[in-house]
Image (cartoon, rainbow over all chains, first blue to last red; front, side):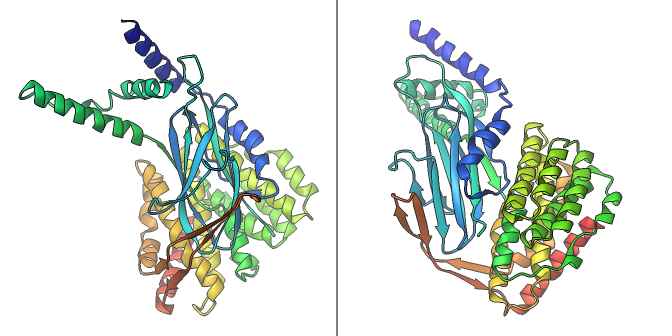
Length: 147
Length: 299
């Protein structure tokens, strides 16, 4: 019975948090994440959303040959680490930050232009005692070199 | 444990959406159990597959930069005259042409055309105000642009900031269709500028960049299809079909990617070879389709 109430509590919290609009992602992306791209120039495209622990999102973008790019993945301070993977259009994994200490910033260069899929997933925090799930903004910003 | 609990909660939270997947009762207890297990697996798979998808088109600044590196030159006669702005009365016209002027602004900035940059920033500001995007290009941005007009890098960064301001404001104001139209206008103008600056398939660097737009064109279609319930977006989707037909004839082949990562510098190279096949006739068709589409937007 105790378990049932626990699950009901968790579900209620999840639904509540899912419907709350934070509306803060824009300033988060602009003020907290964009500076991480320096000295690259942000491409000006806003890719940010609210995610909870365990949730994921994907970004589809064409990257061009012989252009240096920087990817910055930023999450609200209350979120656990964010795993990101880069896949080709056939979903073959080309890169993951999982074996690179969950690095948030990485630089890339392509010899041939192609569409890549950037998959992000907010990890779950198994050590947290509370039954509520952290939720917050996650931004994926892309910069390129101008010289 | 938390992960398991989370998955359970998420599963239950979306169970309403999944109700249609529930099977009818039938057969023995054993078969019911088996069906339940399959149902559970199916539902969990669906829950895991529910994820946010974002489509990111190349920004006009990025496109202009790529074209310059490919050997493009500056030709002011190609820009949409600022005098046309007064003709744009509907939200659709304003949004598409805000994208067009944004591309013109980016093109001029990459070629360090200070006076043109200021003129096109001001006309963009007027269209942005017309779309209730008061904060996208405010006076402080215009002032910063004036103060930094002789520093190309600063100018490019300020322009990039205006794009971020406009598409983030529109998305947070729940107007993603307008954001998509602005991006579409910018993308179409980029293709028009590029094809106007190259006549022969012999101009290899430029032609390569133009043909590569087929990749982001697919993303443009994907983005517009997301909002195809909106009439303005549906109209544009129909208008771009000749460009789609032209791109469909063009072939881009690529080989398997070899990944080389340097953990020290936090840098990865994706090494592969690509081959592009386009005839002069196919290019002429693409160029003509781009011109016609762009002119239908700015008229």
